[in-house]
Length: 186
Image 1 (cartoon, rainbow, N blue to C red):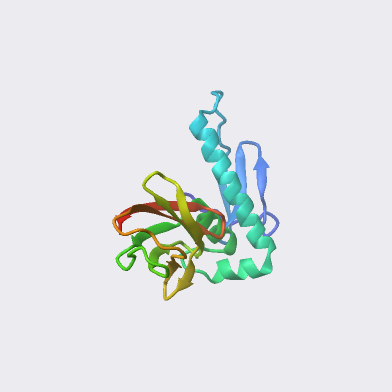
Image 2 (cartoon, one colour):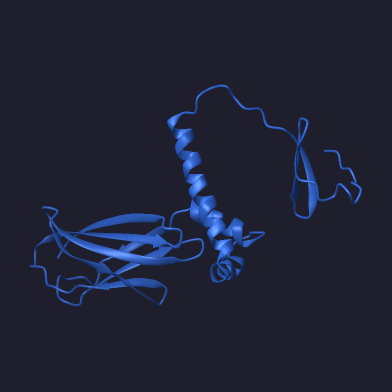
């Protein structure tokens, strides 16, 4: 890789000149050949990837435009150079649900369902849906964050011996959602 020292006139150069692209990266001017555009039509997977990246970039721009969010992403975890990159990365990664714990769930009112979920920056909401064996929703609602986990307390009882499916949906700030289900007999 060649390295050139540009005069102060050219140091902030950005854009295209002839077959070269000039851009700024980490305080330096980087010069690369202009990318070649293929004459082939994009595949559905390529179009979907572009749309996903476009939505992530829009989220990154919205974070940079909002001082409160910019501060959250600039100080957040990860090895990111700036808030835009941190937000873009967060938008491209959905939250992860590590566990839907039903060990203390016996079908009584107030029995807890504990969801352990994580994300690059923060899981902002967890919603729980409890369905019977036929798939009929028995109850649903938001879980509350406490002690590094999310907790949902049943508001109605379930008959002993019944099989229910607990569906937990974790959502992060960019709106990515991950669903995890667990079937349990009470």
